[in-house]
Image (cartoon, rainbow, N blue to C red; front, side, top):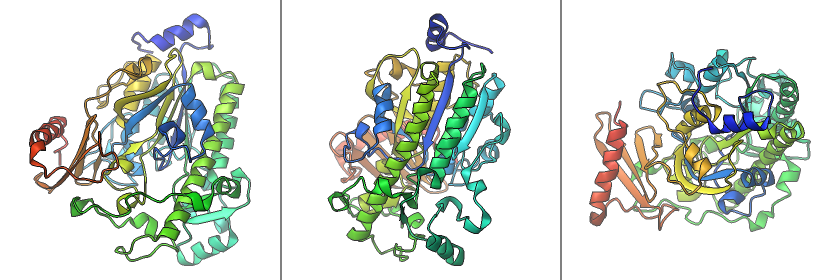
Amino acid sequence: MKRFQSLPALLLLLCGCTAQAEPNVLFIIVDDLRTELPIYGQDHIEAPNIDRLASEGVVFSNAYANVPVCGASRASLMTGLRPTRVRFLGYDARADEDAPGVMPLHAFLKAQGYHTESMGKVLHERKDSEDGWSVPPWSAQEAVPKERATGFRNYQSPENIAAFKKNGVGPAIEVLDVPDNAYFDGQTADRAVAALERLAKTEQPFFLAVGFVKPHLPFTAPKKYWDRYDHDAIELARVKSMPESVPDAARHSFGELRRYTEVPDDPREPVDDELARNLKHGYYASVSYADAQIGRVLDTLRALELDSSTIVLLIGDHGWSLGEHGLWAKHSPFDVATRTVAVMRAPGFDSTGTTQGLVELVDIYPTLLELLGVEPPGHLQGQSFVPLLADIAAPGKEAVFPRWKNADVVKTERYALTTWSDRQGQPIAEMMFDHQIDRDEIENVAPKGNLSLTKQELRALLAELGQEER
């Protein structure tokens, strides 16, 4: 391997923590995981296993997806390339099609001698860049008998399966008293446990990517996770409608949610309070279910004595709206949809706690390579956040840059500016929020004249990045 100096690798060599000089990597990615978790001060959610990992590593309080939709977000972070108007656009984006000739993270590590393995939902399309995996990527969805198959919806109720097969739609929630591995994520955890047990017997370093689907819609989780929550105590979004100061361009009809039977079809009709509480209950149950599967994987890593020689990175692929601004799902430049979860534990780093430094998912590729002591390829557009692992008080990036369709966001420590542009790159709408006093993004301060200089500075950051590329 071609290497540069790496503190973690050096420490592992000196302490004899592993049979190989290179640390392993356990990469866990969770679909639609917003920052409504205890590690971010939201104690009404039960996620003890994420809590435990956080207590042993660093929590990134200001981690941002580069695009708030699953396929594009995953293709972006795995290639280390930012989305543009011609690359990584939608849920079905593929790294191998949108960035041909670019070696994604897993393929790059395979070329360096790593065993690379994927299970569950890692890249959106299982066959995307599949040559980069040492063994064919695995998905529980493909093992479902045809007569029970409902795609990613994974219904287990005979009634829901029959309804879906007849009409192509089903409910947004399903509550059944079934074991964890009745659903895909439990099966993925089974597979990950078996993979770790197998890999522990080898000396080859590994990059094991494990993707959990929940809390993605529909909210199908075993009943015991629903029972953890007092339904009547679930609080609805504080601001349930779009503030008048926000431009029309920020509105959307959350079509992803409207596909389900109990949700109004009319894009102008809001979700009523009763349905909203049911949906939030389902989201919470799904988070707790995913957390339990994460715990099984982490427990196995520790039981096999691999935890001291393995980098663990857990992220969400983007955030999710639960009624904020009257919106649901992702597909939005608002902070609640672009900000996501990131927790990392790395051998050789004793710092624990929460860092406020700005990071974005495009930074994952260079960060892991620095930790592994591998010289990065020249195409990477992110930057390593290893300094934040060494010192949680260290500064993060000056700005991060989510984007959604024709909306470009520049988020600094204090402000977030979103600019919508036409095909010629001319601005057609703007909104700006002061996160120091308005993290919920209620008052659009873009029209305020006293902030014109700040807007110019933020626009300059976007221009410097080249987000104007068409």
